[in-house]
Length: 81
View 1 (cartoon, rainbow, N blue to C red):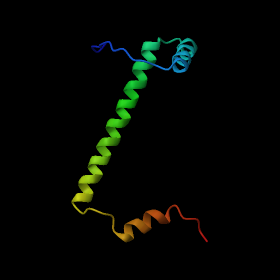
View 2 (cartoon, one colour):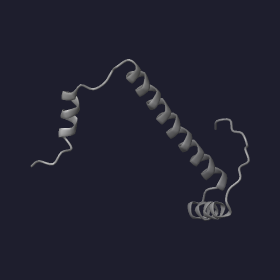
View 3 (tube, helix red, strand yellow):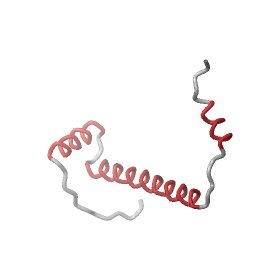
C-alpha cells in the first residue's frame, strides 16, 4: 500500500451526515471515501489545467483550426435539412 498521511478537514454538518450514510451503504470508511473523492478531484483538475495550458500554448503559437477543418467537424453535428 502506498504511503499515506493524515489531514483534517471541516465539513458542513449535512455533508458529514451524507458521508456517514454513504459509508454505511458502501461498507467503506469515511476516510476511504473522502480520500477517493479528493483523488478524483485532483486528477480531474490536474488534467483540465494541463489541457488549458496546452491550448494556450497552441493559441500563442497561432496553431488554430482552418475554416475547412472546423466546418468538417461541425458538419458531423448538424441536422440534415
